Image: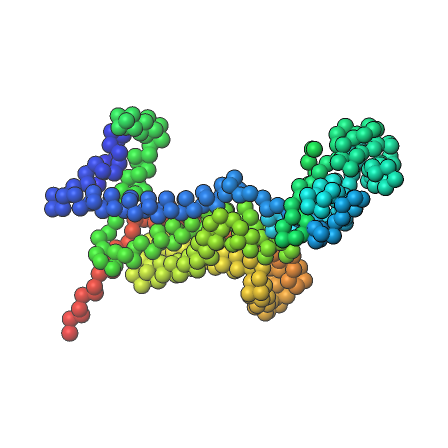
Length: 176
Length: 230
């Protein structure tokens, strides 16, 4: 058995016995190696589990607005929808809407329905072919650009895509 | 490199006495036991190793688990389906729970049949019995947490059994359930017991148990009784 004393690492001091030189050392090494392997496998699993949020991409909550062919060029249409958001094990639903504009029925633009000034809901004025906000008389063009009034930036756009003939949007406010 | 490591070791050793601790804990003398009998002496360490796995995987599961009826089942499904290694970690905890009971009982059988519980090791035995009861407490409280059909009805059965106790039965069942019947308070109560109270008690009792094991030294395997003279 090893003797106490700081000059010696406790183990490995007198591992050889006269009748079995090296047997004890071999078993020690085998135990440490196997135990280390098991511990390493478990640690790697646990560490992967714990740090996995760093590599996980959040699911995008695309919303189906209906057949893309139903949106005609010309007047923008206000579409109401329910967005289902998934936050890990929590699912929540949110009622919202978007203005959908298309010039050719192929490429689409979706606007956040809130004015970029103070968040009032604006409307489409068919006569002047412009978006008009009732609160502070802001006016936006069909492309979302500010024509007049106090808004600091053009209308916020949602990402759009057409998949299998359906118009999909990703409603989240983004600076245009 | 080696020089440096030795120097660092000498520094730490002089200031902490790890060498004495190593001699007392790891390099202590143990009885000679050959073959399968020797294997029986590893059952306590095996239980201890599983407990460590349970503690670590339990912490990891708790990072993604909600002890509330509206989210418990979904959060467990989330661990299984969406977290990296989630199924492995939950699997380890699930199977570890069963093996914890199995190994603790096997360890107890070894101690019993070898007579290791006898004088002067009665206190070690008592601490061990306490630990076995705590393990069963972990099993009972942990079984409810997935909040699926099996978990729910098993706990209905378990708490109803407690309710059959004479005189104080119905009060006992209410205390266990945290309300008049199964519900949200049952889940939070079992969760609190499972992750706070039981681990603390178990850690303390393991310390007592191990201290006694080391202080007494390991008991020798029983010798064959000498044949009685006719």
